[in-house]
Image (cartoon, rainbow over all chains, first blue to last red; front, side, top):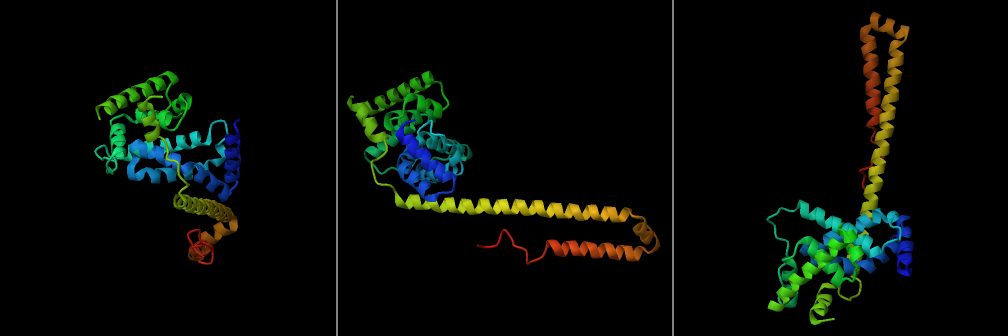
Amino acid sequence: MPQRNEEDLALSRRAARGDHVAFALLVEKYEAPLRSFLARMGAGDLADDIAQEAFIKAWRAAGQYDGRARYSTWLTRIAWRCRLDQLRRQRPVENDEPAGQGGIEDEVQDMLARLGDGERAALVLCEGHGWTHSEAAELLSLPLGTLKSTVARAKSKCREMWSQQ
Amino acid sequence: MNDFDQFLRDTLGPQDRHPDRLFVARVQAQVRLDERLSARRRAIGLRLLRDSLGVAAIAAGLVVLAESPAVSELAAGSPEIFVAGLLAAFGSVVLLFSNPGRSSPFAAD
């Protein structure tokens, strides 16, 4: 088991025994990538709420983290399910894309908004967050080959949009 | 790595920044609230179980009493005394389970 996983496993086990300080350390470590991922998923203003819900679920299930996967992978899986639940609750006509601030950030959000949820998640995790294809395939419940083609397709679409700008 | 790959990495990856203490504090507060609510849910469940057992025990006692010959004779001979006894027993049960002195799981901490 990698050292980082061991550290996180130890913290998670302490959290499972009710140690708030240990859990706060995990939140400090992983709030930035998780919130960034959710924001890129188009969650907009709800990104922080979904991240918070994911951390609460991670606290309740702290004893279930076994250190085989990275803690960030385990946590993102929880957050991804929260995001899917939120999308199911949301009315289809509702647009949750945030109002743009202008500039490159707007362009990126616009580019991502044109991708499907799965494509967006695969692209952000593999190209932006440095996840392996296997980790992303597991998160998205896709066969490895399908995940690779999803990333390639998403990348190709983005490249086309990028070259037009 | 070409320009496009670099662009993706720069724009899609998480920003390198210090932890957001306010967010961490909010999660901590939610965790504590969640713990308190879980404890209350457990307390309510235990109290419901205890009260149900109590009611079942009283009901079983009443059934046994009603089946005894002495009580059957009393019910046949003096129904008004029998009904008054039943009402008194019912009143005692109501008083027992609605005693304001019992701790309420909804009480503020």
